[in-house]
Image (cartoon, rainbow, N blue to C red; front, side):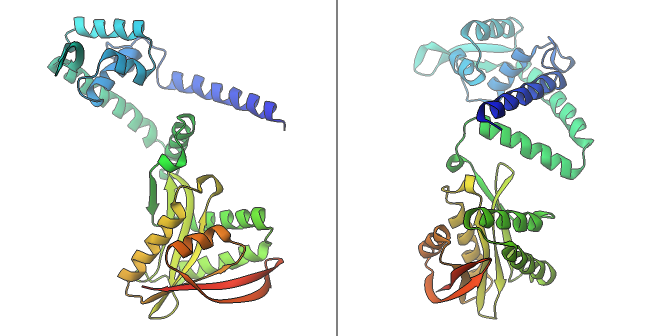
Length: 311
């Protein structure tokens, strides 16, 4: 598939989705949610109610991507209806800030409740899993089309949920096959490690973390018991598209904090010398190389390394 064909197909699908959603959300109606308000009026009311206090017309026009003429007409209509007032801002007599009247606040609350009820009814028809998929897709669209780079996005670390261990097996196997040419032997190893973790985990001394950006899984790590005094860090990985945002370091920091709290005195990890990016994270976290040995695994001649640090 050529790049132009791919773009053309993406545009077609995106337009199909926007046509669906404008109809689904009743955005084409001149009355939103069976209220007296059009979509632009409802959006302006929401912006005044939830945005910075004392916003000016120009501020809202930029935030809502409305032209000056349109925002002016909407505001005049709301003002005539007694829903908003414009008053000079502190220190700037000629700069008119816009606020809701008590009637405007009541109108916003009613609109907001109707929107909550409508969306709640729509999502209530879905299973919990499908709701999660929908919300993750919405977050992803917002982030990518909104142009927010990964380093600026909030990263959440959470405990593994059903389906996450399978995702770790799939993603790690695919990543290392693509980046290093490792065979299915590595996938077998990951399966074995996670199967044992799932079957025998001691929550007080063993734990896993999934890293998410806007609901999308972008990395993982686990810590397990090696012996009474020693923890073992296992299966650290970060998706390619999310690298460079410090996610790997955050995952390792979470492991170290947990290991200390769990009463371990030392933590170790096993890796291979070709995993250069991961090694940089370990060095920054205070790990030191204590052992290395050549081996043939995953279809390649490698140098296995043990790194460790005291806690």
